[in-house]
Image (cartoon, rainbow, N blue to C red):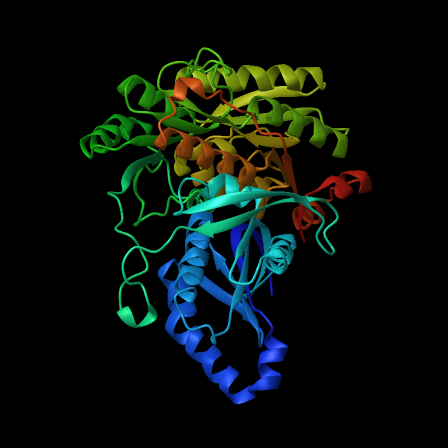
Length: 484
């Protein structure tokens, strides 16, 4: 079974004095606990869009995509528990948000361990949360937070700042028998437009990161997608559709979308992502002071693309020729900047560059069929249209026995030799930060454009073996992901 990682809020709940209660009245305690789960805890978790992934005799662990919803669930439960009989069980609850490991239906990792340790710190009937939870939930949950300072937690190798959560007194009758929803009246959702070429799996990371800030599609926000399917000429029409929907913000995926939005509006806030060099492409005048209505994340491909070519040269030092495959329907400034940069890098590595242009699948087939058979490596531009045609590019390259390297991990999953690109999980989590800040009233011009701090190296050993390429051990050791 495969495992994966994602950002999640974890709620840990435990019954206070469980052994004592069972010793005094085993059957009565079990009956009360079952009723507590069925009437309060399970419905509260479900209402806040959580999922119970582990239970014990005296407790449970639940996962939430939103930090705010996890804390609201904890407050809902403890508030209603405080209205109950003094003879009923009492709970402690802890909440933490962090990276977790998903293994089937189960969840493991530091995020789970910290939530359990925070629960142990809570007073009976209380809630303890980490500083990361406090940063996201404070001011957005009907509760007060008391700073308990840094605490040393069992089996956690670093001090953790802990906050005690005090629920505000309930308004009206919210007893279990009242039959009233625990959820307050929802505000009108904010509307976010997403403009790009086509859906990609990494966009799910953005949805999870937005949810961690409390922005849940279909509840607190409404996300509207518009895809051009590789035809950049459609962008003006798609932008007009988004503007007509009175959206609050646009997320522009990749340089062509960002440039099209910049030309279309100077008032709607825009968060850009997957932009190689925002300044060189004329999207903003400065990373530190973007000005206007645009901010977001650069993916630093003007640095990662040269690094990938240098890495290939380390793997195949005898290589002398490189073919660059660029879209001929891309915006001129973007295509020219990437080609010129990569040609200069190739010459510095004693590689003779040749540039080929293609956009559609048929054009890619035609260009590759005429490619010089002495070519040592093919480098597609990090363009979304190239991504759409990656299986055609890789299939044709493998027939020629020429490796493909790139800055998009989907290529490697389909047979390219390697990709060296920014850690896109980190990038899209930061995009959620920009969206959250703007929805809270911060102007885009006040948010500097950031560049990624982490890289992600993927290698395909199956492809290397088929092409007779021996990848040195030190490079294998550097890989973040290896396809075998």
